[in-house]
Amino acid sequence: IERLHWFPNVEQWQIGAEVQTSAELPDMRLDIELSLGNGLDRTILSDDTYAVRDREVRRVIQLPDPGIDDARNDLLWSPESPTLIQARLRLLAADGTILDDVQSYVGLRSVGTDGDRFMLNGRPFTLRLVLDQGYWPESGLTAPSPEALKRDIELTLAMGFNGARKHQKIEDPRYLYWADRLGLLVWEELPSAYRFTRDAVSRLTRTWTAAIERDLSHPCIVAWVPF
Image (cartoon, rainbow, N blue to C red; front, side):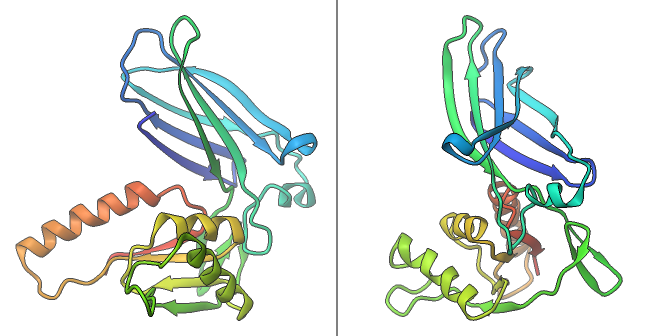
């Protein structure tokens, strides 16, 4: 399994999955299991197997819909309730041999605007964002430790913010992981070029494309700021 992207759809109560493999063997299959909770409280939401064609699988997974908002809220991702749906993907050869086994997660949430209001999961949501430069006194733009990234988000939340605009910085994936887990909205932002040149355009396009490719599936990211 070389690449994995998730595309949640709250209105249709679906999760899209796009998977690309590096292997190209005949009659490969991909098993995708989605679940909620752990241990005895674990609930299987979906478990299906799909044929791999041209090293790709593109499927829409229909979740069981309770049809009641109170029950639906238990599955939605938000800063107040950062619920993550656990995912397990197993790539299978024709004889059932497991070629790869990957753990992942997806947040079921939608973002949008209605007039001058920011909408999260179809409802108005008040943004309280800190402008986060992402610098560290002892190490510049690189966090001194993985624990420091988690602590930075905990302090942001403790001060009453529910989001961070990462000012002209594409943040470490581990920061985005803890933002997903702890419930912090993130604006991902590309650093500005010093001058407008052909090289700047080329570099910006390559870097921004790679950043979106890498970070697309994080539920914490609610805005992309290329300029």
